[in-house]
Image (tube, rainbow, N blue to C red; front, side):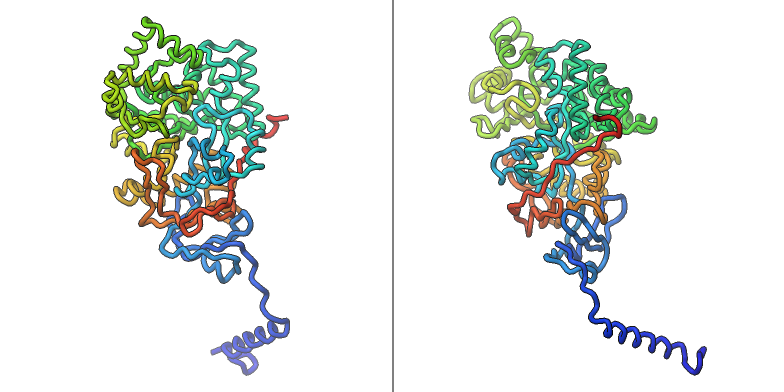
Length: 544
């Protein structure tokens, strides 16, 4: 062994260690560990990216993640520590397309927690979808800042809301001045923080708009870095058909110069079953050509909409409710309406495939066929009676709500496996997807059927969704990112909501943190409202 002035290397090292310890004592005790508000330790962590699960801890200070890695308890002292052994720690799930208005706009703080989403592990939800988003983004933001909300909100300005504000329920095209007003409303909303333009071209009055009109309006969102999110014109065979409608959605994005996101992608109805492969081919070609095209999907075989939207021809709803009822009262017009309703009912699988789901009505939880039999009338007459009793305008998400069993499993499976399809709920009142989409997808398609692995499920419910929406510092567990975190038991995460009992909270989420605020603790929601209405930063130089 080498020697230095009579000392071996080993002895020199021992002396150095002792000297270091004596020096530390001379300068007082070791410095205290930095303070964290919350540690999550011992769990199997997935950071939201494309990598694998790993054992790692998370440290949170205020609304931010400050550490992701091993041995957090040796690095931080914390006011609270969550032991996550045996559980999965992941970014809070992001639902890009949903309808939480009943909850988030309530005067009751308990409702504004958005419990149906919290218990699914969702921390962020897209609002103003299907073209329904108000262009007054600043007013909405002020309200939520004053009143609080349980989840983060990603607002869209809606093509339908803008068109209705300028043209009402008219089926005509806008003149130059009216188109300029529509474009101005979208521009203003984008400058107030909207993340893009949503459309619902299936719904009246948006269905009256031609492609050129949509492109012109969408261009204002495109200039400011926005996304085009669309419930496309036809998911079935109502008019242009599913394939041509998908081509139109892609064309709108290409011509406007913006990313396209197809909401709740599906092949709806007997006429288009088996066409999912054609949708995949269209999207893949657009992506190969350099266009950004993505989609979301909910894991159910029944869609949800209004009875009027499902069965009435669009022309019967022009001009609003009173005009519609006058057409019903005209035998000549009603005959034509009934004929089209018959065909619409056929493509959705018949009256036995229509479950009426409006909360608190005499027909709730029964099929259209059952109600028609009770009333001793035809299914079309029963539908007209129900629609006629509904006092709301027959537009987006109005009229008696239904669950429509119209999808085929192989189409759902194929779309779910695409790397550009993320998880959503399209959560609307009366359908179990509002309370259970993310746990249902995990339980059925990850745990039971193994169609997806757990890492893919998490990535397509968190990081990929954040990237699509353009969310900054969200969707991943990384230092400096906002502390939106879910802790769940992979053995028990599941939906309890069903088509008959659609308002049952999901199980399996033990803890949920929204912006550093604990929203679910040991499986029970707290009183905290940790959510925020998020703000999209428009492209530089495009706003006053």
